[in-house]
Every structure is written in C-alpha cells, then in structure tokens.
Length: 311
Image (cartoon, rainbow, N blue to C red):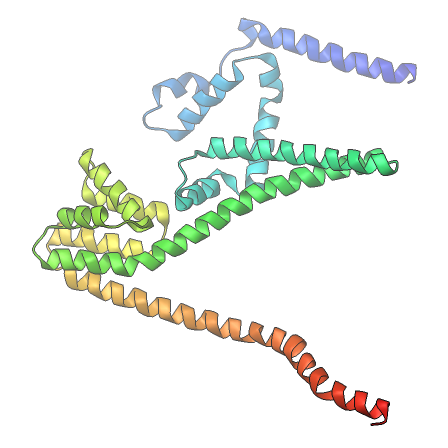
C-alpha cells in the first residue's frame, strides 16, 4: 500500500479513537430529553419503553453512540425485508407454538449458520476431486445459509396454515356443541367451559385458554376478543361478537351459533367444490401426457409389429 493509503487509515483510526474518548467524557455526554423522560413514562408510552430498552442494550458506550443508529436502521430494514416481528408473532400464534419471536430468530440464526457450514462442507468435498475457486466456496456458503433461513420461515408458515385450516374445519362442530349446551339451559361461560373440556382439537385448546384467562379474572368478553384478534379468523370474530352481544344485551345465542355453523359448513362445501374444480384441470395432465400415449402405443404397436414381420 502507498504512503497516502496508510495515512488515510491512520487518520480514520485516530479520529475514531479521539471521538470515543470525547463521547466518554460525562460533561460531553449529556442525555437527550427523550432519554431523561422515558423512565417516567414506561406505563403509558411504548416509545418510552423502547427508548429505555435501547439505552439498556447500548450501555452508553461510545461505540454504541457511534454505530447504534446505523445498526437500528439496518435491523429495521432487515425485519421489513424478512417479514417483520409482527408477522412472525402472528404465525407463531397461529401455529400454536410457545416459542417467542426472539427464540424463533435465534433458531433461524442457528439454522443459517448450520446451512453455511453445510455449504462449506460441500465445497470441501468438491475440492477433494478438483480445485474450487474461493468465490465458489463463498457462493455455496451463502446459498446454504439462505436456504436454511428460508426453510425455517417456510416451515413456520406451513405450520400456521395447517393449524388455521384445522381451526376453520372444527368451528362448525364446536359452534353446534355450544348451541346444544346453551339450549340445555347453561350460561355462556359454563357452555364454553364444558365444550372446551370435551373438545380435543385445536379450537378446543383455544377455548381452554380462554377459560383459563377467565379463571384468572379476565372478563369473558375481553378473553374472546383477544382470541379473535390473535387468530384473525373471520368466523371466530363473528362468534366472539355474538357471545359478547349475548352477554351485554341478553340476545339469544343458540340460534345464532347454529346459523353460523350452517354458514361455515356451506362455505366449506363451496371451497371444496372450488378445489375440486382446480384439481379436475390438473388431473388432465397425467391423462393427456401419460395414459393417452400409452393407450395409443398399446393399440398401434402390435399392428406395426405384425406388418413389419410380414405376417
């Protein structure tokens, strides 16, 4: 390297060192107004909680003051690109997983490292047979890391979709059981507790969670609304609204639940007909490209064979 390049590197290092020393001086490191007010607003402001958490993570170091905003911006951009924490939290809730968003991200990070290691191992195995360029090593490591990262996300989305489908399929049966319990004279809370205890599916598990929250002192309406907001299933939202309306205004609930169960079964039947219509078109592919050529071959080949043999 030339003398000018070394001078530039030394100047940058010297500047960072002097800036770190100056920032570490208490007189020059006065906290911002937001940082001073945040500890007193924790119970009313989410921004204040984020500010306190960010200050606790940074620890007030000079490097955190220098590179903290850039790191936060890069983190938010990465979260927007990969779906964000809200999307991951929703899919974890739909999948019925007890894992937190941070735990899932840690698992995803570990899988990414494992994928990179597998990519390097494949590169090493290829290098035994023939020389591999350094760029190919890096490319295989990046491909393995991206594949592992995407696989974790796809598996979570698949688990969420499957559990969502099971919840939707179980709703008509659960709604009819609730209507039967209400028609027998039980109250809304008692009927939900009985059906939750008797059900063994995913919706029964959600109702048992609602019953547990009510047992802890949460109102039934709030527990049902929280379940509907967390799962974001239109049928469950209508069910929660119907139960809340019955609790607040004394409206008849059994007939409403029977109507909702009938509507859900009709919608499910319509979805099955649509799926059958799409599958009918796909079924023509093996028929046209598999069965039909074999049929023509079986019908024509004996005649051609006989003509060639002169029989």
